[in-house]
Image (cartoon, rainbow, N blue to C red; front, side, top):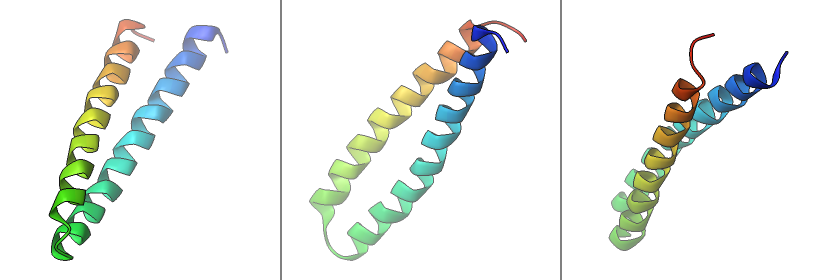
Length: 68
């Protein structure tokens, strides 16, 4: 496996990993909101936005590697 293919594998993994965490974060935010912890939920949503932006950068990096 060459370095570009290794990069594809790593980027795919990180994207999937972030997507999975996003689902967990969403559930956690709802729990916080239901517990009346609005400020904590707001900070979590801010973090989720930042994580989504980083995941988009990973997707762009993967695309920039070009076709397989």
